[in-house]
Length: 311
Image (tube, rainbow, N blue to C red; front, side, top):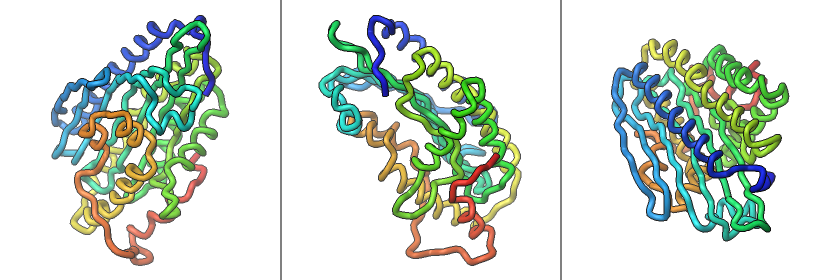
């Protein structure tokens, strides 16, 4: 996380361009998902008392998606919340702005994976000539299958790699490892899914270059995910598969409530609880010390919950 001089970065105009991109990205993703599901998203515009607001686009009970949330927010504050100030104590007391698009899609068919994507910008503007404005971008996407298919994992990871390739060959392997490490349930000893890419604190080599990378990640999402939805959405399923899906969704809940930085930041900064918790699945189960029978399709998942080179 590197500070950038306020005299070099025209912070207000830069923020406006990022905000416009994020709002447009939300609209484009929702349009693609509405076409895939055949159900219109609900639109919920909200304001935050301390400053800023957002637009929550969501559906429940769709033909393809049991719950889908595509959220845009641009919020401001007068002092960093603990989850941020602990990492950047030199910015304590600064006003700040955070904006981004975050989505979580929980499909109905257990053969279609759950997916998460997020692109974001955080800015702590300089208050006077003796300070420098600080900013960093973050984001990524990751896939959480219940019944995994290697070709789906390869497609998802290839799309992530191709999105990052114009910016340098080292970005994909670095962000891929970051994703494997971040989406890891330490108390379970397993990854949340088959990973993807994750990055945070991105400020070098410069604002425009970082913003271009974030745009390429955001623009790649529908290409990474919708072909899997179209292919796996045709798989027949029954109560056995739905029960296993609900069991594995419990892991998703555990990660979001115990480890996820975005959830923690949103709640600590006085964010809109209804929007923050839209990432949760509509149905999840926990079973005491349950393990799938060896040789079953459910048991096959465990072999996918250790990081590997999907390419």
